[in-house]
Image (tube, rainbow, N blue to C red; front, side):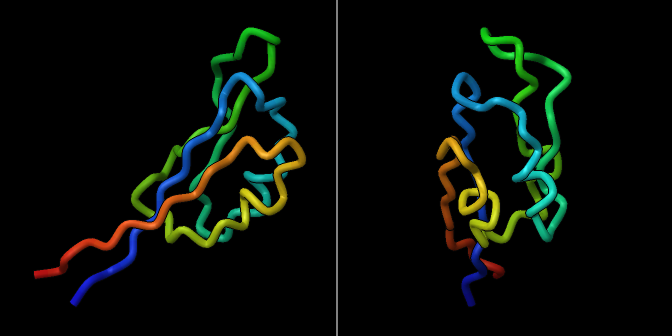
Amino acid sequence: MAKVKGAIVVNTERCKGCNLCVVACPAKVLSLSPDSNLKGYNFSYMSNADSCVGCAACAYVCPDACITVYKVKTNTD
């Protein structure tokens, strides 16, 4: 049986670190990075990637459309 695993890609140069995606994530996958982008903003990243289910709540709330969500089927054999 296949299991769905989620993954996100954050456009780190467009992200302004508003923290909305971090708060919206029900699985507590995202955090703000201690590093900053060229504009000086701390961008979001997947700090707990194994917990991502691909619900896309983070992408829905992102005001700058910086997040792309992927769903990947994995085998549980």
